[in-house]
Length: 203
Image (cartoon, rainbow, N blue to C red; front, top):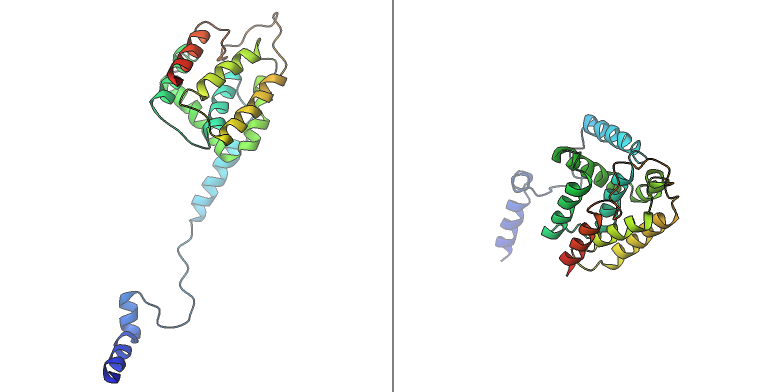
């Protein structure tokens, strides 16, 4: 038994064998993993800096999409009903945009929320203030869309309540002011129909 034990230690204790098997043969610290390239780090930093300049850019339409992403982000749910709602939003409230432009807007708002969700919500009033004639009706449409895939989890419900506070406190647009063209609102043509479809999908 002693001979077998000595043979085992002699073989597996060999630095060459340990190197071949990927085992450490001494107590020196392991080699550091290759780090990220400086060019990659600089590129990511530039992209983040450019995104941070866009938090206050846009209008009610961007705010509407951002609010949807913010509320649904904790679950990142993406099912057929969610896609149907987004497609109907584009058809009824963003027909002036091509599909590529709509996807780009959705992607940008998603990245803004992922980058800094607190700032994404804090800057919503800058996109909404004075832009909606009936903010509470727009909020009801938003509520119908985000709940279409099913009941919201606790965190998503908390986020929806926070968005509701924003819509409830913004300054409505005066009737004399020209309406903007980017308002997903239940007051616009097709908005009520979209809300009813959202509720039907939820059922």
